[in-house]
Image (cartoon, rainbow, N blue to C red; front, side, top):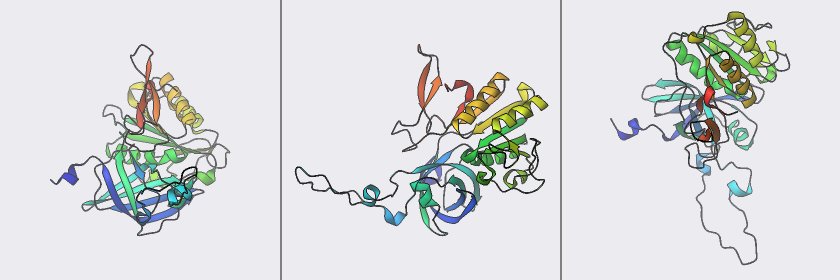
Length: 317
């Protein structure tokens, strides 16, 4: 086997297969790569949000004494992103010797706004796969997925792995408003009372029912997705030994889900989100406070290398 095929991560060039709007501010990007190391649900990639032809080599600039340097390169003088953007993997398909990578992102900043304009066939630089992944427990038959906003995409990838492992799965998906839910709705229609239905195409194709919650009650259950989860748990009362709860999304949502799960005795795995400059532990910027056995009772871990998936019981919120 060649050395490139044994790599756990690397920098690769992907070709845009599609980049389509899903809902307000959200897009689905599909990339074709000639090779990508094995990936796991919960991992992410760092995507360069600029064209390959736009890469600029650094060079020295003479600055006369007493004057300010003149910023000329695009990444300094213009609104051009210098750092890569971390994006969770929403899906992967192995095709021949290559792979198709699916990413769902929200276009809200300079980098992702640029990304929303890329066209089919355009090459993009991909660094990854990075981080750890979710653990699937062979002894626990039931899984609940809780995603909020851009925390929904890793739940889609995880749902595929859980379905392949024969688990019973229910997905809870939340958004501020129905216009910003990054899912395709079909099938049985969305329940307004929190009844899981085959209503989201990304999950229903796996025979996984979903509950949709929106803060403004414009779609599905009105209120937070954690409240919808709480109602479902109160109704069904799954046994502690049977259930794992997986969650990703806004930190307040994840905290609510984690504390709810732990108070009921359920295992909960949390995919944390942080601003990441490098994604490989070099910049030390994406810290997460974790409980440990040290005298002070906690230490900092890095979201990019120690995570992004953590046991909820270890997190100091």
